[in-house]
Every structure is written in structure tokens, then in C-alpha cells.
Length: 90
Image 1: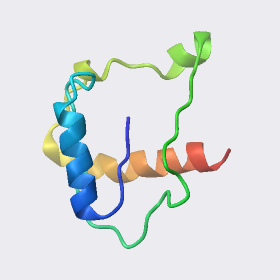
Image 2: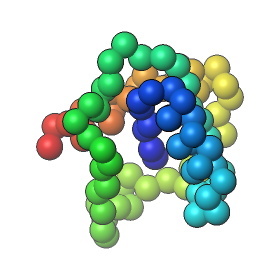
Image 3: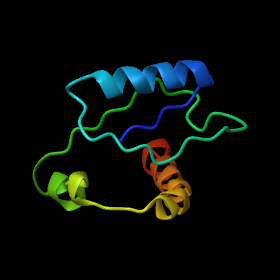
Image 4: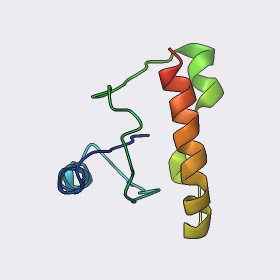
């Protein structure tokens, strides 16, 4: 999962670059809306490598998840808060 925030034109250009990159498949945009301030202003990129049981515990093939657009709109705030709690707590 990736969260991209910043100046709108730069975010759109980066998203389009990712969409065209063959290494990225089945991109699903969960939210696209203006924000008052960056939620992860001090981050440039985060990556956490999980192994063994730790990786299996949270793993899910996202290709198998089907969400309707109204559900995505309701879920984006929850996903963002989950990312904040998990990533910024470290």
C-alpha cells in the first residue's frame, strides 16, 4: 500500500508514472482529495520488511478484495489513521 501526498500536480504525475510502470499491477486509488496539511510531512518513503509469521499475519492478496466505490470513500480515513498509528508510533 502506498500513500502519496504533496502538491497536486506532482502527486498526479507520480501516480501516472506508477500506473505506467509494469512493476505495479492492479493499482486501486482509494482516495483523491485535498488535505489541509501533510499527514506524513517528515517522511519521504517508508518500507518495512516482514518475515515469517509476522508477514503472514497481515498478508492478504489485495487482488482478491472487491470494494465498491462508496465503501472505499468510507474506508480511506480508517486506512490513513491505521497507517499513522503504525508508522508514526515507531
